[in-house]
Length: 258
Image (cartoon, rainbow, N blue to C red):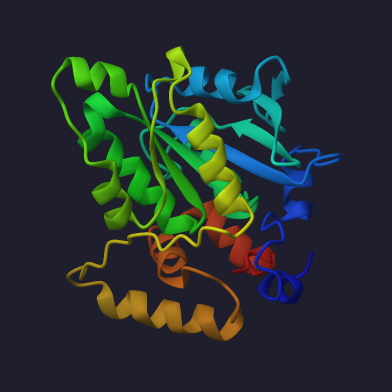
């Protein structure tokens, strides 16, 4: 689907089908693709199993030795493919796992990225959450292990957190199946455009490089007028991110659209 059609159709899938094919994702018989991201040890695999049941298979990412799990589910008549990304603490592309996760969200443009966090270690997990929200405006926060948090007398105001982050926040205890139906509904709402995310993004002045960031951002906007999050791309270029540099030089970056 081209960018014009996407802009005129709020309920249309947002994913980039050509890039998904390059990433080894077959969307035959599926309407939407969902990425599952999160730190290690947040119960992400349990969430994956809770959403997909037995409808899953494993393989490797193209050209990598990293295992990829895929599954599927149907909700409200729509067919969803769920791709389990490697567990990472960041998306700065300093390791193979981080590169895979970052590239899938950036270039594959999944219809929704579910970010699984440990409710007992929320502050630590928010680093990845904020990085994901710099890349995509289609996300759902899965506040997992909420039962353990309650046992430790940790109380999280999920409604206020949702307002701050600008995305749905769903408390879950995946091992008990608690909150999974609500997670499915929020994922459906974001994928179909019924819920429009307005993600929180950090705006900070970077001493000594702000002029350079603004200059690169301006050039990116001129060359790629439909490119979202040009400031984030500019920062990656200035940091010497080779994958982003190559994508800009080849024009591949132009395939990333709102």
